[in-house]
Image (cartoon, rainbow, N blue to C red; front, top):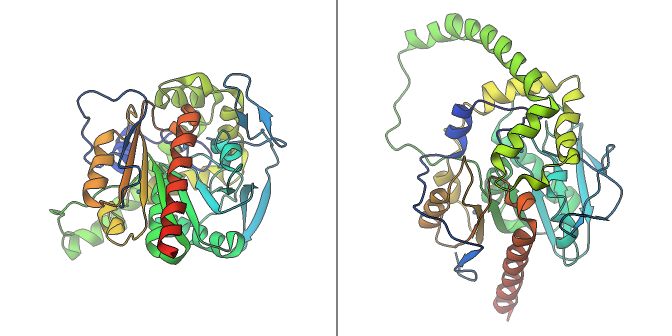
Length: 367
């Protein structure tokens, strides 16, 4: 989730950090497509939340949606940590992974529709939503291992992974690590960067010592002061609403439930420390987990459901992913960073079509 908006406790990182993590050399395409353009739909070929009390009807769109449920849905203990997740429906499993600062509730318009044909799970990553705000050093492999174990212990059979933003990056790295349990991956404006082939080596030993014992301690004091203020500011409901509206082209779905689902986790006593660790450790040190290195290990079909009007991650990134990994289908949408919540009817339709094509392909291979 969502992205400019919130960390584990729903807060806004700086635009410079976000652009570096999400854009990765992205170039805007000239012009944009109307509606949905489907490219190679059967070709062979990759942050905001809350909860309620079963299905209800959205008075605006007339769509079923997950109700707001402050206490959450289901909980699973992973390595001694409390992990929240939603489970609905029957059939082949589909696992939904939220973006930066979001939670399972961000899939509120997708879970009920997908659950009509599939067994749907939506999980809160550690440090986000209703999952525990663990005081650990966060790294991409933490969430990879969490999702992998969730599939082994809760899902218990091969599944399709669907992720938005940071959740997309998590889905990719999980699929590369656990190919036997991942049937396909669908990405909605995924985070992650392509590697820099001209990366420079580190400095001398003397420079490293000075940085470790003099520069870094002073920098940490300054960072804590600045990020502490940003944490307090970013968790205010008015600020959350403003940031959400900046990444939704049509902000009509930015409602009180969505805002509360982001601000509520900020009340956790550990939320501020988790925010600090995410901002200083995770968001600024991702060069070793590049899209090209992950895609080179991927072996399943990939779907890109891309909001072309995203202010952070434009359509050029989707094209670059397909160039690198041909077993990719692209569906372009007139939406921002979170198309699954902004234009859920289009996302649901495209995702169901693609899931159906995977089943047909699997049936043909079985003959």
